[in-house]
Image (tube, rainbow, N blue to C red; front, side):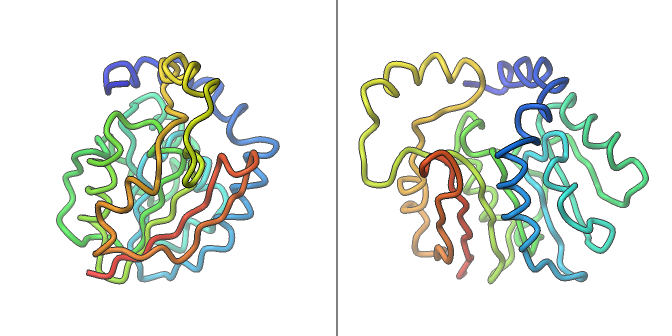
Length: 206
């Protein structure tokens, strides 16, 4: 996967993305996760990879200081149209190289992002960089099973699925251990498809 290919994929997918990922089980899971988050009015919140804005629909967004970025102009346009009368700051930006200053945000929401960016390590490092000390990263995504190797079937289909703009073989454990001195996992819950999709909350210690 690369940024150029992802732009093509999400240009095509922007017209039907909500029908796949903002209905049924996905919608129920999103609601259960994000309607419970205790955002505070004075806190600054960053949505990284906002897509069509599905997660924003689940919170009282008028109460918060929200910035939302996406690399795909087509996906971002969908989100902007939904919230055109809001104060949300929408920006076209690469999550692997954000233009924000260090320690700019209290919360970062990364929903279905780390499995689609070309370099998940760069993306995660950037989220840590722009997060304030004692801030939290909220992650909803699919990852390889904990402490298990991919099945032969998944290994065989992984290259073909990646052509659709997503990777089913990434390990959150591998991603986290590179930064485990600065972070602490405070919640890690299987939420969909027998553990393939997880909700993870990470606290920044320093």
